[in-house]
Image (cartoon, rainbow, N blue to C red; front, top):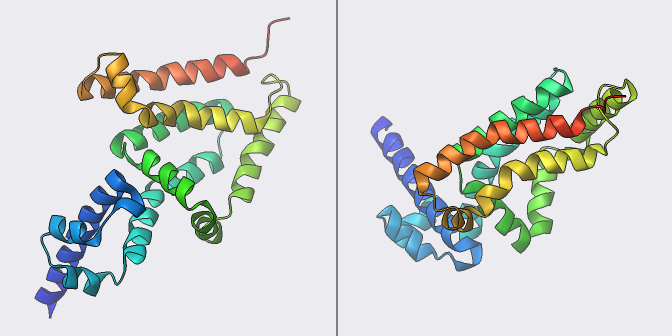
Length: 210
């Protein structure tokens, strides 16, 4: 029995990796169960035995990929530390996370564009964003009221923080071509970007000298 369970787990892991590759490359609509089965080196009947439908398989892959990002973002935004320490920590950790999983942002955004309502409902049911964002927004407003940073809309600050980290990965092929970077060069450039984005954000929040 133990051998069967081990075999089942190995087969399931192989299916999920194959599905992840196909879904990321072709999206939900373009993906075919036959292609996933072939890539996983199993037949289609066995694929349906483990995952009864393409929708079910996609949900598992999407939730796993989103799960790499969401908990870490929540942890960073909710951390009990001063804002001017939290921002550098956020940039460093968020960029490191995307460097480990560079294709996840594009995959998530493409699928949200395809099926925004259903995917957001599932995400909202698991982790309502409102309370999480309220903590960060309140912290920004407190820093402004105490004169430690210049007045800024916390919503714009959060979007700037996230987009400055994510955009290069969404535009990865264009940026690599435009800047004549191979994959190693792109990785090095993104490591440099941690410092650049942090300095840019902190200088933008600095209170002007009297």
